[in-house]
Image (tube, rainbow, N blue to C red):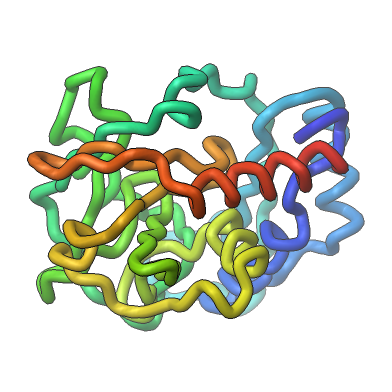
Length: 237
C-alpha cells in the first residue's frame, strides 16, 4: 500500500479471483476490498486480504449456505536490506520436495506447511531465500518468491501446473517482458547453466540471485531492466 492505494492491484485482484474460483469461495466486491484496504492502511504499509469459508462444525463437507469471511489487515513495510536488490542474494536449495496437486496448483491458500518447513532448513542470515523443487527434478519457486532465469537472452519462469504459487508480481513481470518471457519446466541444471536469475514478489520487487551452493552469478541486464520497470510503475501509483 502506498498512500492508502494498493500497488499492482490489478494482478492481486486477478489472483484472488482465480483462487476464490479454485476453492469455490465467493469473491468479495472489488469496491468493498479497496475501501477496506484504504481504511486499514491509509499510509504506506503491507496489507493482507484473507477470504475464508466462515465458521462451520466438524467434518470436511462444505456448508450448504456458507457465510464467507474477510480478514483485512495491515503491517509495517518490511525492512529488507537495500543490498539485496543492489548486490544480489545467496539462496539455499531446500531439501523439502513440493508435492503435486494440479487442482490447487498456482493458488495461494492458507496451507503453507511446505513453505514453513522448507524455511526452517536454514538459519544463516547470509541466506536470503530458499528454492523449492519437485520430485521430477524441476525447480518450482522460492519459499516466498517466484523464480526467473535468463539464458541466451531468453527469460523463463517455472511452469506451475503441478504445484507452486502464481504470484501477483510474477504475472506483472511476465506482462512487462511480453513475448520475451516463457513459462516452462526448468530443471536444476537449467538454473545452474543460466546467465542470470532473479526472484520476485510484491514486497521485494526483484532480487538478483548471485550464489547457489557452488554457482555464482553477477546481477545481469535483464534483472536490472525488470527492477527499473517495476520501480517506474510503482512510482506512478
